[in-house]
Length: 202
Image (cartoon, helix red, strand yellow):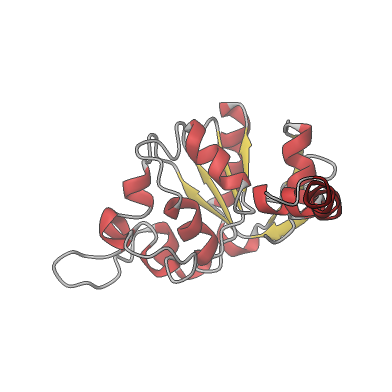
């Protein structure tokens, strides 16, 4: 998993509440277990005209100034619905490394940390400010600094955010659950050798 330390990029405004995981990545794209290739189908039913398959120009990520967005500013209860891990996979494959919202569905929130995405919960007033910053397009970049737990806006404003210390440690060091286990590889190997020598019949 890629480390998350500091990110400066374009923030895309998606002022919608209760965006569920089927909106993020519809069920017909869940046939793969690969984490790549899903970005093109992110928000598929909002990005593409069902009749023609062509992009709908009014959707935020189809606008030229947001095609390279790495931050998403959105509404409350983001990621609700089913527990599909394909939702953060699709966001990450598109290029989104940080999602900012008033709150998230619990399973989606946890899945973000396991995939190198930083989900940030903020009071509605702060989200509204960042939504306004994001609405300015590519000329108004936002910096998210995980080490200092600060978001710096294009006008120099700073917003502090809270995050669990353990989750912060894991993101800074690029550790998912497998990575956390591998950190203890020497201890695990030593234990296995000890058990083999003491109980060779196992």
